Image 1 (cartoon, helix red, strand yellow):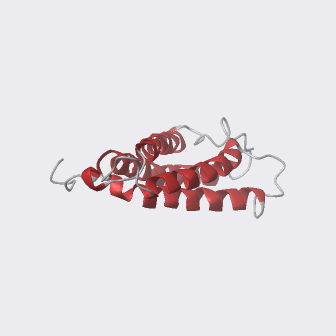
Image 2 (spheres, one colour; image 1 turned 90 degrees about the horizontal axis):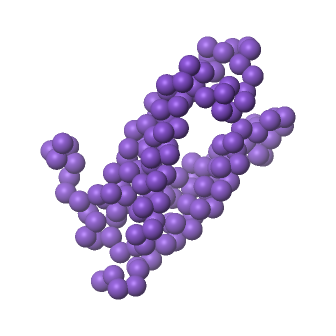
Image 3 (cartoon, one colour; image 1 turned 45 degrees about the horizontal axis):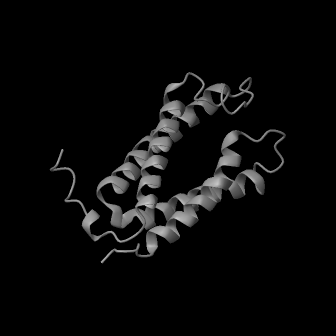
Amino acid sequence: MMALLPPSTNVDYRGARLSAWALMLMGVLTAAAGLVHYGLPDGGIGVIAGVDLSTRRETIVGMAAWIGAIQIPHGVAEVLVGWRYRTLTPLFLALIALERGLMAVDGWLLKGARAAHHPPEHYASVVVTALSLVLVALASRPRRGAV
């Protein structure tokens, strides 16, 4: 395993520890969502998001599994950065803010705006975007006592 991972960069990280811990939590939640999308028979699209799967079920569930396959390694990478490579924490949090910001814009203003039903992720994306931006700011400035 250690041949796969380069040495830790944590000694060089000067930002808020809270940001690194929050990134790890986000990584766990991202990987968990990926496992749901990949593993549940309906990919969570029906039972969690409440989407009607009476038409094009196979395509929708297949797309959910595809998204889950992306989320699982992405979540693992977020955990690894928060745990061993904290100097990348601001970058990863900024990428999460971009990802979730794009999801929120799509869900509320573009393609999903006219939907009669908004799945929980539409609401969560707005909150996670704002939270990620605050955490980027905290991760980007030296904490008190950091050299």
